[in-house]
Length: 607
Image (cartoon, rainbow, N blue to C red; front, side):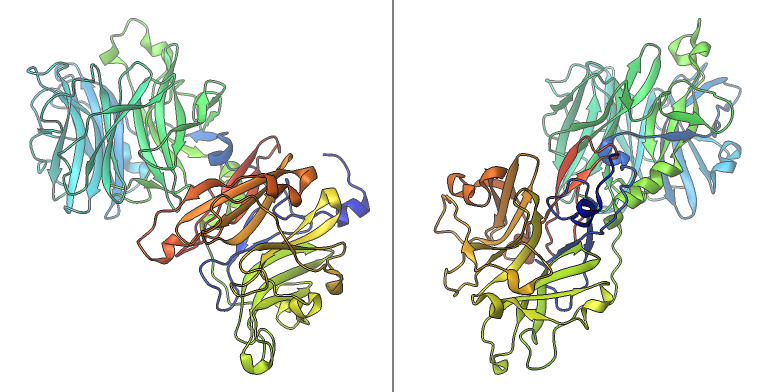
């Protein structure tokens, strides 16, 4: 890292335009409405190690084998594999495929309190088909208050004979209580010639069935929650990649984001890839999806003891819950997997491979890096550090719409002020206060910026535009202001000089939908362009852009583009969007991700 001069270091601003930026949000202003959020930044913030769920660079520690094959009734068991597991009533409930000499495909159940006792837990066989059944998935379907087991069976009347099926029970701990299998599809889908490893996950409206077909394809089918487990749609291919089988999909807890693990082949070895999507019916994007950058393989797994496997196969995340949403905690990632050493494959049939089960735990350094890099995954609400002013002041009623930066050893807070008409101030405006600590802002001197610039300004955003060496306030006029509702900007060469702000100027744009309502303007820059975002109070956010050397006047040549639509409950706060954009950087600062934080009913984490 190059050394900065002292003067350059003093001008370092971690605002929306900064590339080495750590996004932290404070939600602590008195009477703050749902649309208002401030972005805080430290002067000398340390760049944390990057979150593997952003960079795709994972590091794991593998346990010793925790579950090994056990014979049933004198039938020699070769392997225990294809695990699925939930934590319920203080115990782990593990279902696995076992491959034995006489009975080739059966499902085994074990229950135990902790992993140290997993291999001593009494195994029980599920009496489901009397023949072929394997590759289970277990979850609790809350709408019906039933436990479901999804697995595959054989039906000789169909082609292919391998078919997805389900069983149910009211008592997860009773291995004998599971119902006989029922096929998921009334007829085999004509578009599917081969399928394997079936997996169900639900969102708020639908159940989604995923499977693979050994040809580099992952498929999806869906049905409504009230029709589940029937009513499946025609399966469609949703991912084409160098993948093999065992696609398992989860929801990242606290995020509107989904993670799919899928097994791939590297010669005789198996390893895991990962893809992400924002919706279960959306597009899957690679996260850790190459031999050189896997989710888990010998490249990024070390062993807590002797190395016992060179394959990482058929994974199951340890979930944070047990219901149909299949949530996993991004800050506590553990994967149950099947492993074996390729040396044991010599002269063995596939069914005789001695698979065992082990646990991958995200390395502590990577886990702590994830927590440091994304502290907003778990919000902490503190007491308000800034409240409305005393009686008779320009911000007597409320202080809201905050924007804040750290510069010169001080926090500089700008906010929308709302006066009482009896105070002699009749319009909302912008207030300003500066202090060394957030707690000192409440007692700091407050300035009515409107009185200083002689115009009406509200809903500010502050940042330092380095190419021009100017501070900018992006704001708007109120609905009945002198320019009606328009984006405006003010400039100042010195943020410490409260009297140095220019008169407001209208930010000229070439807006197509001029008759529609627009509000809450926000600017962020990348290395080439400045981007202007705004919303329409109808659930949509728009964007314009201009080259950096034409900012702020170049928006007059840019047409608006729909950036995102947030679908919420009709006529509710979920239809109100406040565009807050930030840049998140990887540890090596080589790639930037633009992140959206709409503050609607509740604070929502950047993805």
